[in-house]
Image (tube, rainbow, N blue to C red; front, side):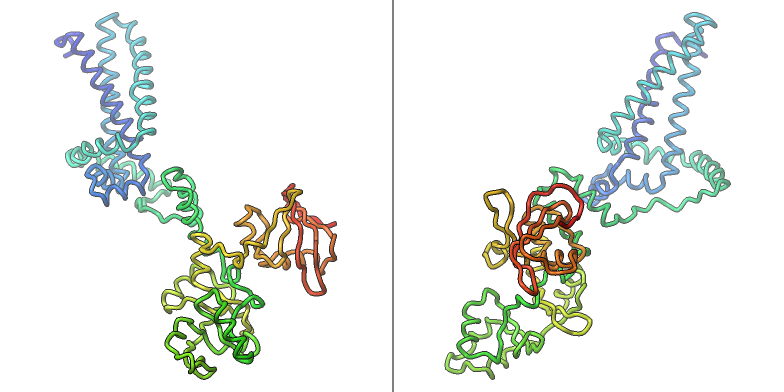
Length: 425
């Protein structure tokens, strides 16, 4: 047959076979390199090539069988054709040289180059290829089925079972990696918000609550003037109402409800009639769960209690949202004055400050898996209340006790981080 076709025709057929081999090799890499989540997104947008690619990848054994069938047919046909061309040109000695040249041509033009291009631009090659492969698979299905049956039989003998190719769910850490690698596709602010949402399971109500000793509320045992002063100066719309101490809470007062009272009718009895039942949550509740509970119960404030039922603090919906989007308020009362930078480059810090707030505002890496305040962290480490001028190092940060009294540390001075060791002096 080769004698009836001119040499130029044989060479043209050889070029076509090499192009077919390049198509099969490159499209295989492109289809297998597709980001499955981006593919799902394009499918939802109605992209035809994406839809066909998803159907093909649902049964990768059939797809690979089809590609290998086409690729091997092209390569083996090219090898036979080269033998004919080489024999025509130089006889038997030229056949070996032709085989060597074909091997290099296949490696460069039909394997390495198209696969590299496909790996760089998988969607550009995969979607057009899917438009070809999908009908081609219908035509060659009997042959592909026999090939798959034989290959799956061999794998079965080695204990390999086909469990499908479902798109597995991402773990939280894998999703964090996806968000990090999104780069400029997501603004830094939105990226931080997404990461904060993923971290809600790690953060508990204990980490964001207003502690017991800082709760602002209405004490019914105080004077009328004191109650009116508390209401007038309140920066919150909801205040706990109690007798003597917060553990004797009576309910929650929404200040908006006071507008319904005539000023001359304002007294303790009318105040009590406006209270709503307090909502209690156990300490250690993850913020992800508490956010859902707030939504289900239509609540915005909850009292955090320990295992004995004693109130440890208050957590609000705003506290949880601030974990996601950052601080809503820039009022000094929200902790802006907890840190003051001095001339020496160190920081004078209120020891009662929340460690997570300090880490977030200052970019520090103080431990957060134990006590919630700087005072608690230092006392736990030293197992005693230190005296002023005493120094220690926590996670590489040199800390000097500036002021303390009999029951707590008042303020400390923190220097620049040196290394990650924890020492005391």
